[in-house]
Length: 101
Image (cartoon, rainbow, N blue to C red; front, side, top):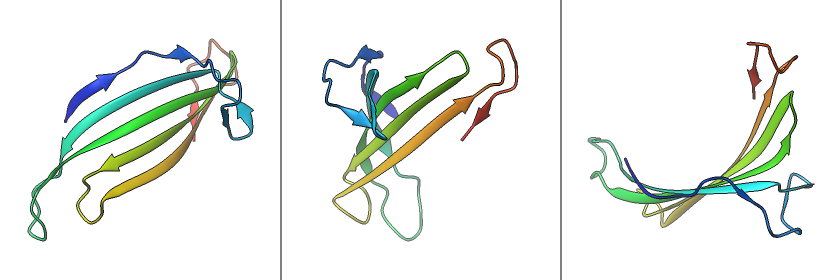
């Protein structure tokens, strides 16, 4: 796996951009090149996937963001797209207890 492009978190300048019906606060983008592992059923290939993160809630007790994954050159198709929703919670900002879903 090789990182081709990486951005730091940036303040969202597009006020109309939404994630789960909430305005996006910050964004981040990664572009990674990865080679599929060896397998007897197909020839290993190299593909590029892009991950775009959108932070839409940040409080002392929770962080919520979405991740969009887009891959080009995957094994059994031209492209592949997924959406993820990440939520991290804690009962107190100083606590070591963190729940992730």
